[in-house]
Image 1: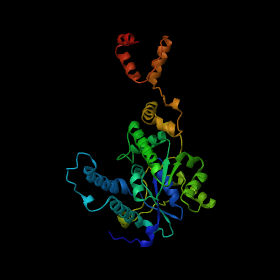
Image 2: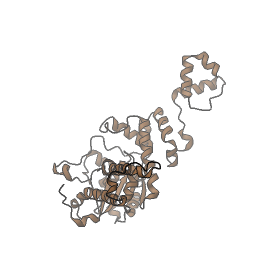
Image 3: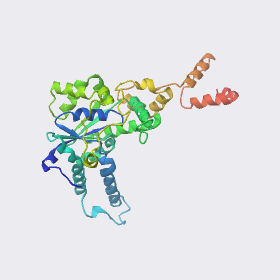
Image 4: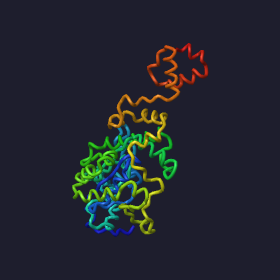
Amino acid sequence: MTNTLDRSRRDLDLVFVVGAGRSGTTWVQEMLGCHPAIVTGQESHIFPAYAARLWSNWRAQLDPARIPGKEDKRCVGIPNYVTEEEFIDVLRTFVKSILFNIAPLKPEATILLEKTPRHAKCLELISRCFPQAKVIHVIRDGRAVVSSLLAAARGWGRNWAASSAKHAAFMWRDAVNNARHAAPQLNHYLEVRYESLIENGCEELQRVLDFLDIRRADSLVHDILAKTSFDKMKRGTYGTAILRHGEWGRRQLLVREPEGFHNRGQIDSWKETLSRRQLKCIYRVAGPLLVDLGYLEKQDTRVDLPSVRLFKELLLALGRRTPRKEVGLETTVQQAHANPEHARERR
């Protein structure tokens, strides 16, 4: 690889934007990329696809020496050649040699911002490689994320997005939990709510710029918000602050998101798209996290399906008690339809 990067550009500060897919991470990247002090490129996936795999192999080779009773195993691999600190330095050099190649495309920038949602699962390794890096964790209502993932699975994101509410809820829950679990180990960590950016864009963007220690003139903030409105991004009239270099740059391919990538930018659009059954799946998987984040009251996690609700009403009309537990209630309904006599005996 021919590295055209000037050595002085290696001193750029690193910022990582992470979060569950479809949480608004690209929107945050676009806004911050509009600032003169920030240069940013398309998702690199450099940690999950490259660095984390090397780190996993390193630990696998080191394990025999750590596990009691296995001291007799032959200790082979590159731990015979470098220490852990030296290997971390190799990973650090590798990551910088890749990411910093876009720096010359915006010479005035002092910060390099990398946005890959899946880096939420690699924050511990990122912290080992770059202790002073800043991490921005974008969080969005899990129900809205599930709705957006399901829509993506029907179109441009069919190769990666979850196609069921249950799977999508797991994706959201795990990504958020991974990032929040790693947060205490990070020197610089900021949570940004998608909903706050929608409702109080100026204040929230100013808070993010303060976290990055860069100039935030009110006129600049207003200009950034105007440039990156959902309407402009959806219609393709904005362009993009996300730069492209390397092989894709050599082939002169433009950074253009696929049809349907940009949504409407509404907070409660999930209310129009998710069924009661899908909400029930989401609450079973991610209800406690939704409550913990303040998106949901604890008592609202109970969602009766139409068949269950009708069964309860029937029981009440007959003067019978409603079962205390909803677990297995749908099975009871099915059994009652299949064998009414058996259902009466159980009651």
